[in-house]
Length: 134
Image 1 (tube, rainbow, N blue to C red):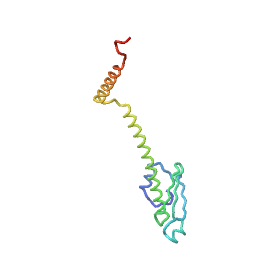
Image 2: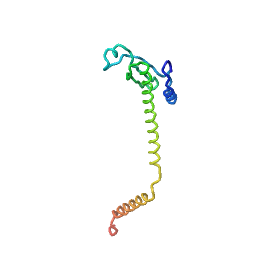
Image 3: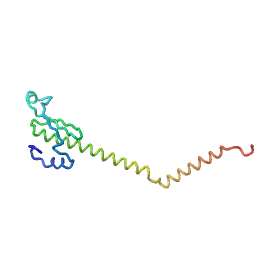
Image 4: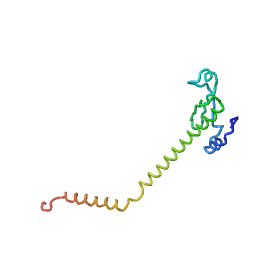
């Protein structure tokens, strides 16, 4: 990472997520909210945008611009991890649903199911024409 303080954990995390510095668009703006003259005069707020996904993170937690750059990258990693985890969970749920739909029924349930069908067929057979009339 260009001129950021050394944070090897962050570098490893970004590498694991395949997050490259070239994919990030970084800009610095003046902050908003409480803080008075200091926040109104300095551009310490970092707006970090991940171009491929369009995710944007805005960070003004710290007074220092360099610390805000680190925090913004951590937040971006958090968001991307949450998205990837949701996708994995959705895929797993889809596989489990398909497995549940296609598996065989337990023997006891199948026995009760067939018994119910036989009972229903006996009821329907009783609805036929009366034997003496033709």
